[in-house]
Length: 269
Image 1 (tube, rainbow, N blue to C red):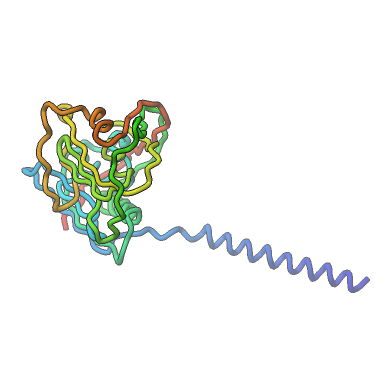
Image 2 (cartoon, rainbow, N blue to C red):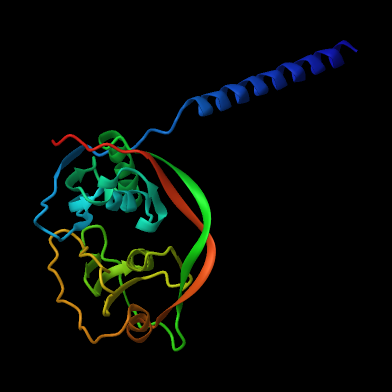
């Protein structure tokens, strides 16, 4: 009988120890917030108002932007389009900034986006929250006859890759579909869902005649501007199907938006 009692007490003591250890572990996990990633060095200066061209992107592991508005920087940092950003002071669409930011060591694209979020919070005092609304979207699908995109090997961290965009022209170099989708969404002013099923990296050239006011210059730092579009060329919808073998379908679905609560102009450094 004594042995049974001792056994039960030993089991109860062991169970209590396990519970205490689990509580301590969970308490520590909830108490510790994930460390915010930040750039090692970041410089912000006013942009050049006399230069209408904007360049922005990641090059050799660094983030560079010239003549970018705060809204453009938010687009990049949170991977959204202009039409998904609401609120904020008027200057977020007009004032332009030149930014050079270097992470400590190597960093991936998603990591640099998180660093940009920290930079915007710290230097622009940006505060925002997310909401979901029903809205019109485009679905990008492969057209009848198949894709005409040229798949290429990944250029790697040091190789040249990404997009260069001019008015009515988009050049892709080892670019994933997410890059094309992001720029098409920006051009057409509507959120876009990739339903192509294409997962590689692609070289392509897309040329179309934009509507008036459509298509600001955008591309990686140091890129040469492409020639102006043919005034008699196709619409972007026709060009996508004829040149890339892709098609846009209108649909309705949930759209995540960002609502700006506060933003301040940064001090130059």
